[in-house]
Length: 318
Image (tube, rainbow, N blue to C red; front, side, top):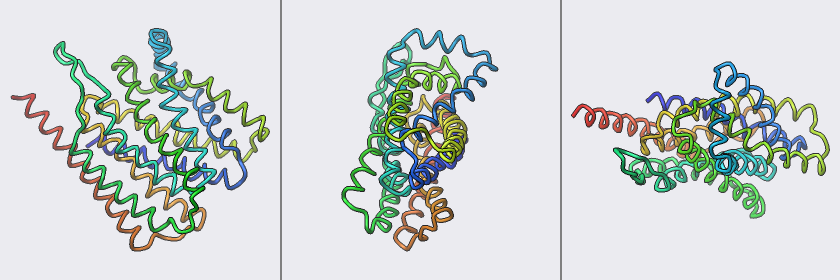
């Protein structure tokens, strides 16, 4: 249950990404600067935290063991996740981006067979937790209802440029995160793992920012301020909370899927933020039904996680 609560709290801070990225795009800011600046700002925060904890040397030792894997999975977990998200913000409203992002719930569950665990000397391949998958589908139905009512006037072009990139991000994020947990094997704490992934992905962010400078010039002061807020709220606070929750659940596929499903709360927070900041219309009956389903799905995931823990405790005692 603690992992679910941490995941929900992380989703609240993650929602700032969708709201402020859309705000920056409406004010003319480049999505390339929005994406790269977030990770540039994150470097000093995590470098100081990891240094104060005396974990810099173990981090670099771990990265030297398999540098190619660090670069590849950091690219999936950070670059292929956040660059498409910011690009999509230029093409569609935050509720489209936030709603489509919920496909990461099912993507995370379906990726489960790609991972293995060594138990008593035997390599065991994880199976898809059908219970978590079924509950995740309830949340997705709710998200679909939420988008259905608000999709009037959305052109095919806007759908393709605003939705397709998010589909890529929704699969890349859980894949990169889970592969990095598997690679580290519990040898690094959450802060060290995040810093390592940022460092490994920096060459890509430098390249993206260079394109941003060449095509749109330097970022405005407003974009710098808003990106800094996104960096602290989503990049530092939310990412740390979410990675802590997934780290605590990494040995239990069902519980891990439940933690990933807490990100559905982003839809609700993003919708409220757009209503308050952009004067968006309040949800009607269909969208309200979708919100109810999302809440029910999150409650069911909490119940499912509790049952899994109780079952594990009984088996351990036996």
